[in-house]
Image 1: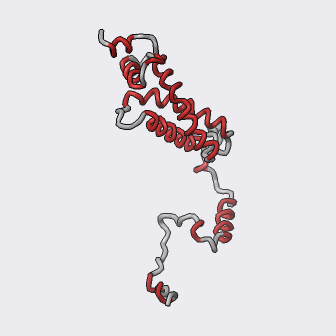
Image 2 (image 1 turned 180 degrees about the vertical axis):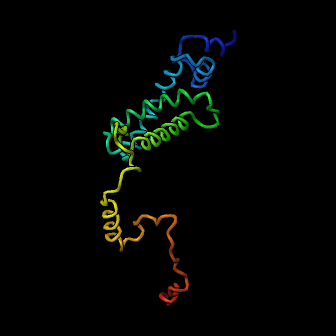
Image 3 (image 1 turned 90 degrees about the vertical axis):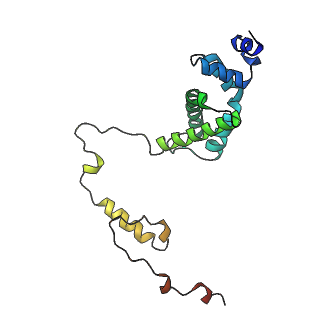
Length: 180
């Protein structure tokens, strides 16, 4: 048995390199010790990235505490790393790949929870699309539109079937007319 095979077979995980731990885990995906050792080595990098993104950066759903959301994303990142690590091709650094997985996990989790908790429709209730309109939606949208008239870029886009006339470029004075 050569030196690399002996180190892979040995139980001395801290002495193994990242690549050897990677190979050991990918040969036997039930080897929790190898993936846990790899995770513990790079935990600080992942934690630091999520700290910057969520706690200091503000990427957090309104219904969550930032530290709790960061910890939730750390757990989800570990699950994603465990599921995807055998596809890692060693073209870049492992830290860079783990940072990428942590970032995409945080973005996915934010997208999942940003709308608030999903409340199932109870018996006897109709879904939102089938409920009759109370008229307040139209009132709110018209008052919002009037309020935002000076801020045309904040208005919601028109419905797809709306007809509108595009302003032609010739209806406005040329740019150079103001700068002579």
